[in-house]
Length: 88
Image 1 (cartoon, one colour):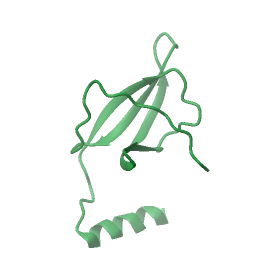
Image 2 (cartoon, helix red, strand yellow; image 1 turned 180 degrees about the vertical axis):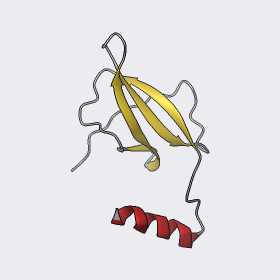
Image 3 (cartoon, helix red, strand yellow; image 1 turned 135 degrees about the horizontal axis):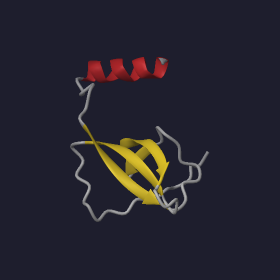
Image 4 (cartoon, helix red, strand yellow; image 1 turned 30 degrees about the vertical axis):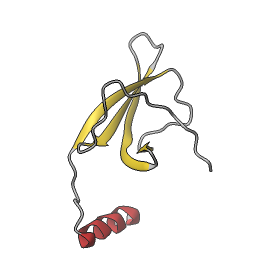
């Protein structure tokens, strides 16, 4: 909770948007080991969103990962997502 308020006030005093519009993107993976809700979504080292949810596909062969992405980020429909393990 402290982190939330710290982030909120930092953005407020810097004049940044506090509430940003977001878009949901669904990615399909065969293996999501280590991925959890609220993990950051990065593009070229910049955080552009978070993992919102993980659920199995109807045939149970893939995991559907819903990503909340900042709406001012244009991600082409033919983009490829990868999961990279944390260095910690």
